[in-house]
Length: 139
Image (cartoon, rainbow, N blue to C red; front, side):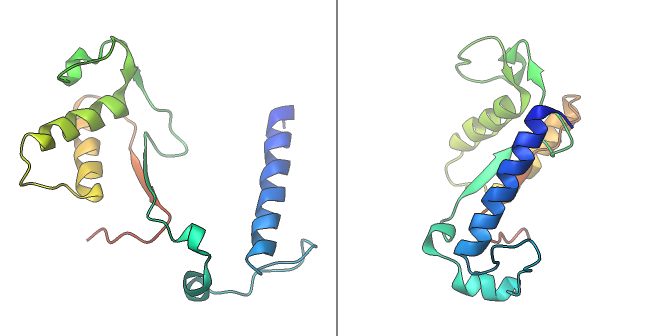
């Protein structure tokens, strides 16, 4: 394992330990296991974790997000340059199109599904992901 991976692993371990202690889910030693269920956690989590934060990432953790040398192929109304990200350009394309039809409000899931379809049809293998601080109804 390289130096930076060791550093990252140690930092993540320390951050997890502090979060667990703060939430009352662990002690000072590694042998203390969380005893809180998901339901208990959801009921007692701090307000900071109750925010409605959602994120669309460019790909799965095991993938790499693609860059494109010419974003004009994404038909954006005002591309700010020639090169850019395939996922970002696809997202902007969908949002600009949605803006033209204000009576249709796309959900996060609909945007994600549309992004996946457009990227796949464009020959990109990356699969955008949706993450959230809170549960999302995907049905």
